[in-house]
Length: 333
Ligand code: TXA
Ligand code: MG
Image 1 (tube, rainbow, N blue to C red):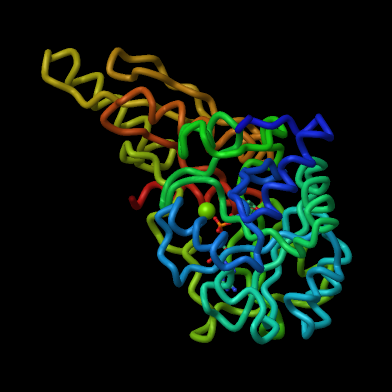
Image 2: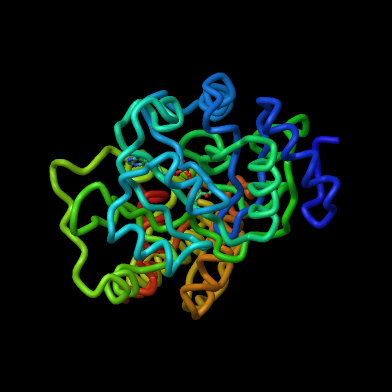
């Protein structure tokens, strides 16, 4: 059975056995669904790159069930990283540490560093623990989407990406909804590579000092490519006033009987409905709620086959960093 239920212990065990046998298993985490393989099995990890269409040099995050397992991959993990993960794991934080020589080379995309995360989702943790009991020290898992596409937040999204023959361990809809915060801890102070639910203010408070600035030494991360997380439909990100003006322009064209762009709108403000606006979704008031639904809303609007998705720029405050980041990347596609 390709679709396994995370609430059924026998199914979780099946997932763990498949990982130990070198197969790919997609699984729920609290952020997004991951496409997993035994991080120490080069052929299995290569199958992730092939399935995603991901270029080989782009490193994967290794998911672990314990600190000991993390240290197997990065024995020289620094004090800042250890402090942060003792406060934030299990949870939506990935730390990048120096990689042990000869360990997880393919998973790390050949880099001498490695990304590590202990997810908080009970289904992910159960899978990782059972896999560990079968000798799988870590599970390399990028988001379970094809390269450059919107990350999946339900089992159905994963099946839309890869078809129904892939094993998927269903854990329901992801509660965080955007990918983990990534912190490069190969340098001191650590540098934020990708914002997520855990923001820089919270991390700085835990560390007791500021994060470092992104510099030339910073490793290349595809999650930091501009056109990432993109639906097929072009996305235009606009300030509320510009969005209102664009909608008024559309109404004018409509009234004069001219051919107009068919748009879907995702905004915090309510705008008067127009015929050319095929769908309107209201962005939630809180950043956490917006993050939770973001990728699934983008998928829904993408499925409408409109010409453009118009999105209102979210607030500039720090709690919106993760959502703003994902929308900016979607908009430059
Ligand atoms: O929430 C998440 O992080 C999800 C779930 C499944 O855990 N995973 C995820 O993986 O988003 P992925 O591959 O889509 O994004 C991983 C990001 C990439 O941008 C990659 O370049 C970066 O992590 N990364 C991983 N290891 C790295 C390393 N050693 N150096 C620099 N960047 C690294
Ligand atoms: Mg991804």
